[in-house]
Amino acid sequence: MEKVVIIRYAEIHLKGKNRGYFERVFANNLEKALKGIRHELHRTSGRYLVANFDEEWTEEIMRRISRVFGVHSYSQGLLTESSPDAIYAAARLVVPAEGSFKVQTHRGDKHYPLTSMEISAHIGGRLLDEFPALCVDVHTPAHTVYVDIRESGRALVFGTFCDGPHGMPVSTAGRGLLLISGGIDSPVAGYMMAKRGLTVELLHFHSYPYTNEAAKEKVVTLARLLSDYTLVTRLTTVSVTHIQEEIHKKCAAELNVTLLRRFMLRIAERVSAHVGAGCLVTGESLGQVASQTLEGLTSSNAVVSLPVLRPLIGFDKEDIIEVAKKIGTFETSTLPYEDCCTVFLPDFPAIRPKLPFIEEEEKKLDVEGLVEDALSTREIIRL
Ligand code: ATP
Ligand code: MG
Image (cartoon, rainbow, N blue to C red; front, side):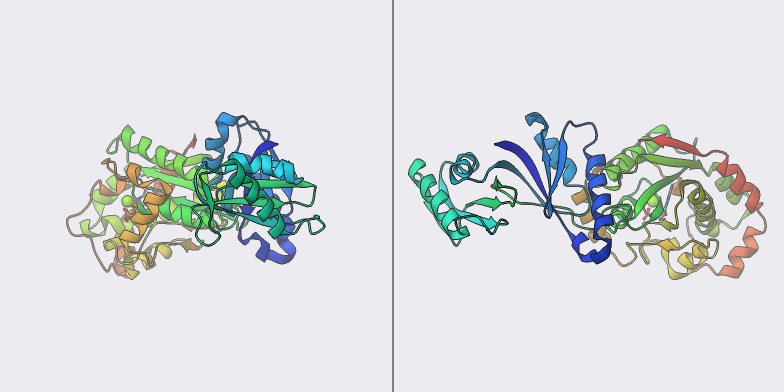
């Protein structure tokens, strides 16, 4: 009998002819997630098994698997021979000592000599004999012992189902570049696109020395948390300090944010070419702040030809916070460090900036030169 982690996968089966490809990517992602932990990964019809790992790594393996998109559910369990005695030996380790329970059997091997009902009755009966404080309740049991008879003359026995993150395996939907700030929204946006299978590369703009080292560390921490899901382990940073100073010096104050955002997208498009991304991703949500009105979004879109994906566009802040808490980024996001957007923030930002006015103001700036200067500050941080 061997300790294993059982992984069932999700939407992949919908993909018909591409199934083989999706499964290869999925297995590859599982391997990436388990990097650094001694283990073996096996495929058995419709499931993956993590086996041959050291007992003390079980929790960590479960934690990492809980973040691999495509995982529908996962369980800690035992792999045994499929004889009734072997199954029983495993079941008695899985069942608690008291309370109501039932045994639920699934027979993947249809040639197995006993029916599912017979196996459940046999194992249940023996458990009752051995543990007098147990009682059977087939309708609302406190515990269920699952027995899964596989084709290979082996059986899986387990006591819990953990819900996985669902979604599509990352990297099956191409590559995008997430503009990540230190805020609540952008990490959630990255999570959501990764869940649809996008490989999410990361770009952060800083305004050193107006923003400090702690602000940068905060983003690095967020990027690390996100990388559990995205499996991407690098973060590109670019300074926009000189751009903010130029805008502040030369342009109408109410357009500061609008103009900066246009620079961010231009720079992001150029960084996309470096990392092979085919789209940009932001954490914008309609109407959340002055720059996220329809006019604000239009003015940003106007300077790039890549699509800008905004998965949070129709989300309320509370909805976003709920996801941020679920994925573990909320606490870090709410640490009180300055983001580059808050430096030089005008008292009254333009809420409905008109494109002709924006373009007129922008003529006061050497746009291409400023973008080039920004790109020369590009750094890559390994997470
Ligand atoms: P967030 O909570 O993600 O910071 P926000 O509500 O503060 O978002 P804005 O500051 O207007 O909104 O930013 C909107 C989007 O622009 C962010 O979600 C992010 O994608 C991008 N962005 C903002 N600041 C930065 C930055 N310093 N570096 C990279 N991207 C940024
Ligand atoms: Mg922000």
